[in-house]
Image (cartoon, rainbow, N blue to C red):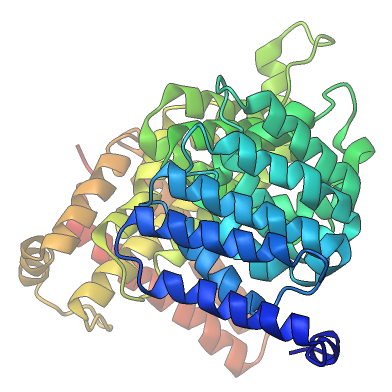
Length: 477
């Protein structure tokens, strides 16, 4: 109870008001069906209206709780409409300053309603936001993410309230300032999967495609890390529509040749975006490839040459790092599902179907593919693979293929390896072996004993790796 309420308690009429509120709230405790709730709300409304001269509503915590319960999705629209009447009565009584102070108290019931509301309820709810929330201006900021999460479900294309919801969102953005608005929007997309499609649709509709991202930085919000995380999460959403819209957003907001994001952030987004190839959806793949190969240029007569130049200059290194990062995440020896373990191999298999991408990065990532496969199989079977390589090859191969997880890993890896030219893996392994030998000899001649031992250990580890590959991979076909 605040100071204002304590002072009012000296007024006998206000004390009678408190007693009347208590009595009205008791009716909720005895409600057994939805008609009882409508009756209880009607009695509460009458008490509030009869005492409208007092701007301080007593028992506001309990009232807020009861109103939120009356907006439960399982209840019919009649109860929702009656509860919204109560909200409006309270908002009229307390005024904007007190509403801003008690925003969370009353909003906890309102914000989740629009997604589940009947068509007859939606206009009343939107009116509450328009009449009582918009005037709060910058004081909306503490509850802004919740408000956007509550409004965005109304932004369903083709729906009766699409334009009204869009206008409301634009007015909220103007009221709190654009940067704060978009920060809250990215927070909503990150934490609430249900509003990702309307949220991204809103951003795409309000981008000025005639301007560069640099000229509309307010869309990033106040924290680019939050935007990056929201975009990375959305592009891996279970809905193809969300993924498609997110890729459209990425194409505009994060071009490789002039992105506002840092290199690690670009790798984070790209690592997430690469997972769309697992869906085998051409609409998704086309957008991903367009991002990696760059925008079409009218200055170049040969589009393929331009795409190759763009990829080599701007995208290739980031794609290599993203692919290596995905492989490392699955090769850490931590407990993972089979589906997770197979993803890196399947992503690379899909990329190899695109001649401008997969084959170009293969030289840089294949050694990491070998290491990841080795780490995963070793972790699964707890293999003790030490020199001098005297293990029983037939027994090891049998163990690897008897284990369901390692057998599937080997099968998928072989699908990848079989897509190469027959000579390629032998040649690749030979070149790596030669490089390890060269480094070891150089270390012996140029450095001290400690560095020499480190180089010899790398050579030994590579021999272990090749020994393992000889057990599981058909290098000759």
